[in-house]
Length: 134
Image 1 (cartoon, helix red, strand yellow):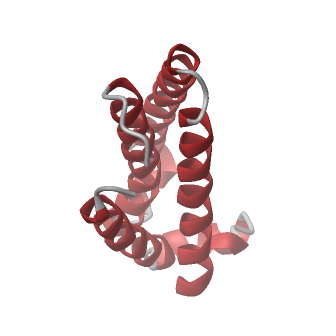
Image 2 (cartoon, rainbow, N blue to C red; image 1 turned 30 degrees about the horizontal axis):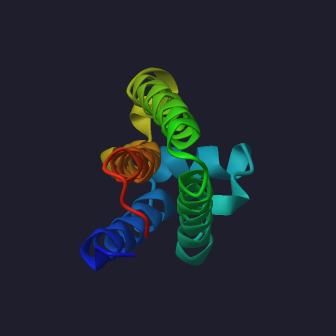
């Protein structure tokens, strides 16, 4: 944990993402109720969900960084590519169809979560390539 600024920024973005996900507009609230998205019904549940996802991403990155450098590079790059694909899928999904009506804040929060995962895995790739061990 050499760079505390990254983790402070990540914490602020996790709180922001939790708030955005917990506050959809009326159509988004109906969708959350209808599709039983109980993980993001309230602010505490949404921040908990986002925190768990980001914590697991940090843990996976940390564990991959403990392996030999070639294996760690391969795993972290694969995770980064997968998370970029997830970000693209989320961006496409939340900007078309019925999700387009759920409110700009909710859509931003739904897209910010995979963006945070990309950020974590991207930092993991950078740390492994630059041979930083935190």
